[in-house]
Length: 150
View 1 (cartoon, rainbow, N blue to C red):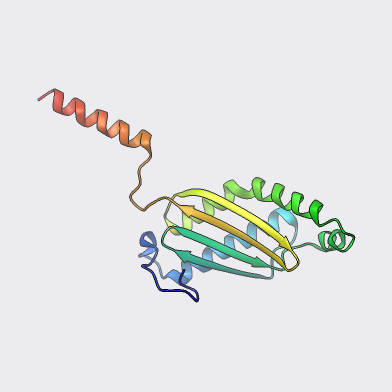
View 2 (cartoon, rainbow, N blue to C red):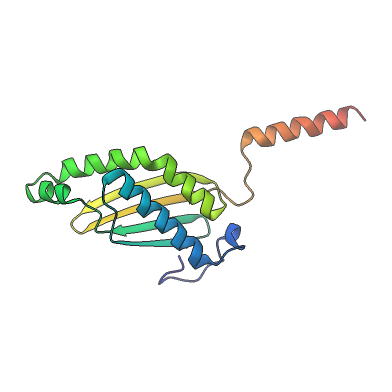
């Protein structure tokens, strides 16, 4: 990771844009989605970009109602509800990350912690030149037909 760790090669697919602007765009998109779904967005968001991993760390995410539930010992209920929101938002979050990074998301992982109030949204990216097996098979069949006709 770039932040506080050893420096690695830049996210290869975002060479057309400054890394900071891509990170800010992804953080903004995630915050906006969380606000739309929960009625309140986090007060802090930071995106970390690595070769094949994008992680958004969000702070101060819980609504007033969720904080009340946590105080009443119902943190498990809050976490179950947050997981449901994350599953519901996942398609839109993945689309936002793919749009801003120019890369395909291979896997999305998400979790929350209530004390401290932190959420993490992680997106594992496919290698920059990865093709789906369907596309590869179709291209191979096309090439094979081309060779057969010669």
